[in-house]
Amino acid sequence: MLERWKEKEGAEVEIYEELRTLTSEVISRTAFGSSFEEGKQIFGMLHKMMALAETNMYTIRLPFIR
Image (cartoon, rainbow, N blue to C red; front, side, top):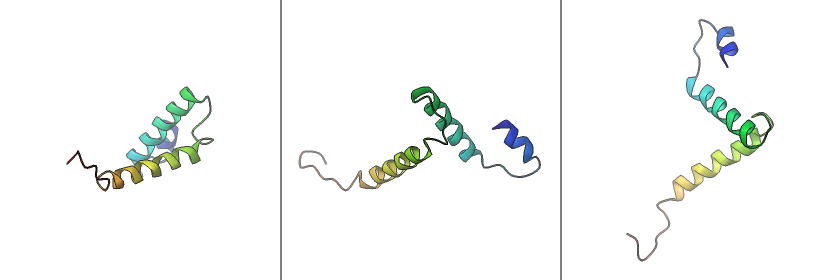
């Protein structure tokens, strides 16, 4: 990550995306023993699933919970 930043010296760097990629890389190497690039599709699906869960969180109505 730092080497990529050095290459972009003087240019803007999208910190959120870089840190998200770094975190995903650490998790995938620790949990699965593979790199983020190999599991990129899985992390993309997890991201979509979290977005769907967030939008549907308040649409489910249970009679005993208000």
